[in-house]
Structures are given as C-alpha cells and as structure tokens.
Length: 77
Image (cartoon, rainbow, N blue to C red; front, side):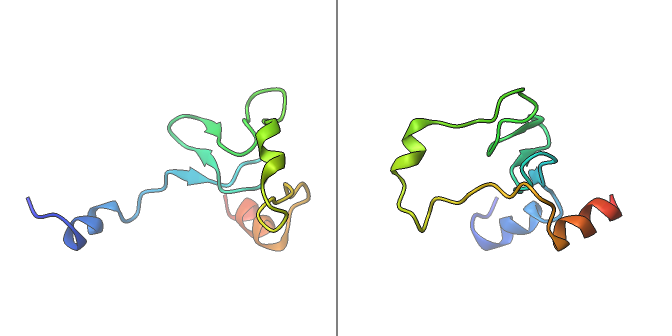
C-alpha cells in the first residue's frame, strides 16, 4: 500500500462535520452526533474558562443568526 498523495484520494466525498443547527459552525460530527463548538444536543452551550485566554483576534463569537450561505444550505437540505 502506498502512502502519501495517492492515498488522499480515498478521503474525497466524505463529510465528517456538517453545519450545526444551533451555532452555525461546521462542527457537528455526523457519526458522533455532537457539535464540537457548542456541544449540541446538550441543553447548555459548551464553554470553558480557558477559552477566555485566547488572543482577541483568534477568539470568535458564535454566529447566532443565519447568514446568507447558511440560508442557502438550509434551503437545499
């Protein structure tokens, strides 16, 4: 079995994560049925105190309202 670039062709067409219906990030794991970003389907939003230590340019706020791209994705599903 060869390693490297030819093997990566086998990974095409498979989606591990899809957009989460609660936070909108592409973090919902299809097989685990859990969002890595917000923790959906848990009742409480996933948050940890160590996330506050991130630099301001890396700390992103969750997008709660559907954007144009998300509206198109939701409509087509």
